[in-house]
Amino acid sequence: MSHELSIATSLHEVLDVATRRVNETLGEARLTLWLWDPRLEALQLKGTYALSEAEVAANNAIAQTDRFRQGSPVFRSFDRVEPLAVTALGASAHAVGAFCVSSAFKACYVAPVVSLRGALGALALFSPQAYEDEAFVLRCLQAMSAQLSSSMTQDRLRSELTEKATQLRLTNSQLEHVIDELREVDRVKTGFLNAVSHELRTPLATIQGYAELLEDGAAGEMNPEQSSFVARISGASLQLKSLVDDLLDLACLNAGKFRLEPRAFHYADLMRDVVGQLKVISDRKRQTLTLAVESEIPMLEIDPLRLTQVVNNLVSNAIKYTPEQGSVHVRVSLAERMVRTEVRDTGIGIPEGHRGMLFSNFHRVDNRLSREDGGVGLGLAISKGFVEAHGGRIDFSSAPGEGSTFWFELPVPREGDLAEG
Image (cartoon, rainbow, N blue to C red; front, side, top):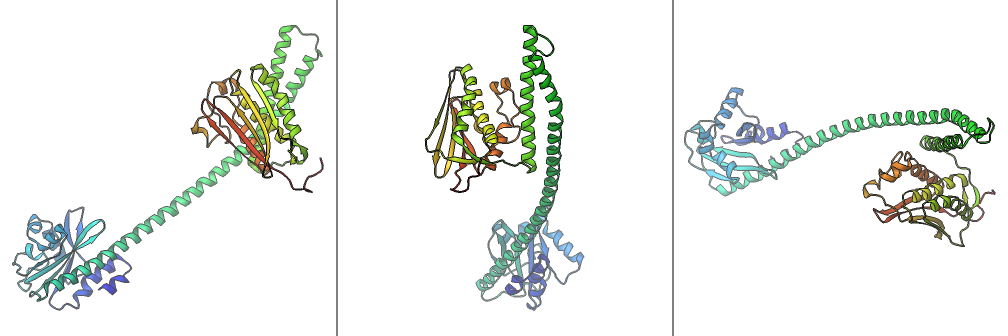
């Protein structure tokens, strides 16, 4: 039985081995298998026997009665989870175990079938006479019960694995469908941003052009109130132009069509120009804006226009989110063939919950300053794309109420790799 069970490939075969095949070798004795049915809360006869369906049904009906639970050694062994030998059976079907009411069976030997999850049932051997070595018979039944439990557990695990594999295939199929839909949405979104950005450029250029003509007096001299209105139009058009440019950059980055125009450039000069231009804004807020550049900073292979956008975005953000009379410190240093730029402020800081999303598209930290200054949350996402396109990396550290430090690193080209600017 142990060998047969070890190669069984289904629960039906396991049950057949434990009953029909074993009984073929037992002569007058009979081996029966009872498994617990949680729905009926009763032991039920399982396997293949020389019984009709009606006889099996009748036996299982008796096994559901209280008298069976009280008087059967089969149920007693299962309930106590211990082997049991009864060598003087009565003629009652409840005592015999509802298998065969016959005076031919005088002894009953039972071993529970147990798994890690608890008792599964019981294996009962009915014999015309008591065996001399009772302990040996019970050990044999326990060994068969253990092998049977192992085979049933393996079958259950195979079924669960098959079910999980089916669920996994279904989930993978659903995920692939969702991914395809997301790719299509992303493609449509990128196309939409690209189209809208290009369509906005023509009327925006017209607005800017006419605003400049009015400021130059092409339509006659304006009074102070008119000049104020035109200045607001011009300022708003510049903000809109910046947004359109960001949308175009984002569309190119998402579509994989973004291209750098790198050349050899003095990065230290770029930093001095950008920070110098932004000092006017920090002075209005009575802030301290400083720049420290190490003397060993080499020339870099960069796209000056794109990195100007990155530095401008990080420093202007630091100014924006730092209260009046605060400070913003910019530092450029060299370490291990990487040029590191740090922008440290004494501003409001960034909540921890925003760390994983800060460089994503259209993400903004919602607070009073962000609502007052506007913006749609594209600057950091675009800056990340530009820095990584240069082979660098960007990140930040922050503590709410204590300020933030944004930094990015750019690789130093090896000698002979610099393109002429």
